[in-house]
Image 1: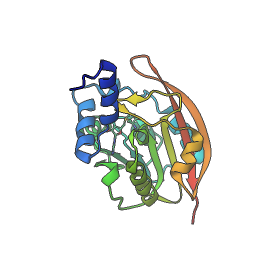
Image 2: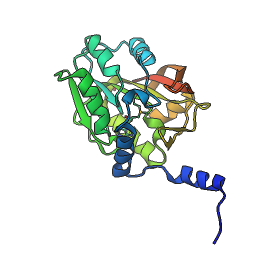
Image 3: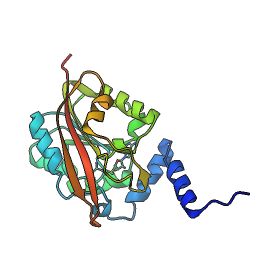
Image 4: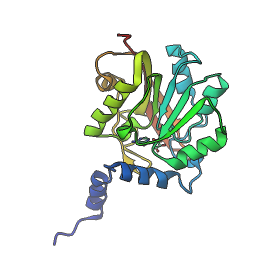
Length: 225
Ligand SMILES: C[S@@+](CC[C@H](N)C(=O)[O-])C[C@H]1O[C@@H](n2cnc3c(N)ncnc32)[C@H](O)[C@@H]1O
């Protein structure tokens, strides 16, 4: 029998630890959130500064239908409610993450909470804005196509997209999972025809433990036909 070195074992774990089913994904993210303070999840940010600035760049009005995919325990929903938004949907695979947000926000008719795997979710309406911070970069292979299909079914003609992933010089892993890192140019190909990148930027996020995570942000508009 061949004995693997510790480094080889770590490498093997890195290529095989990608959760490939809804059950595995749900279990992974429940473990990340359950028992941990949501503020300690490494991607957590105290203020969704870039999201709000890009919303303004795109001119997203408060009556717009906004979908935050993988919204987790982010305070984006709180900040959008404070700005007078009336039609917010927060989708996440983790019940624990949604529970943390719901406890903060309380019962509010302006917010719809959806506990689903984005990759098997069937949107039943159109949204004016698709927002994703730090979800897409966990996907690989066919999952990327699945994500793109859901996005294209959910975003209204003339609607918009704000997405953020780790930048090419960002970490290779996050929350215990491997990630794919993207440049702004690569986003164009991800979104495909009919989407025009309006603005892109780089943001360096400092985690609660003090490490840095460079992000690529893209704001894009879908053509109206
Ligand atoms: C790194 S966190 C980012 C959370 C939030 N967007 C933020 O900026 O703080 C990734 C989030 O995506 C959720 N997630 C991961 N894969 C998902 C999937 N396939 N469908 C829905 N949510 C997913 C996780 O539960 C987690 O809340």
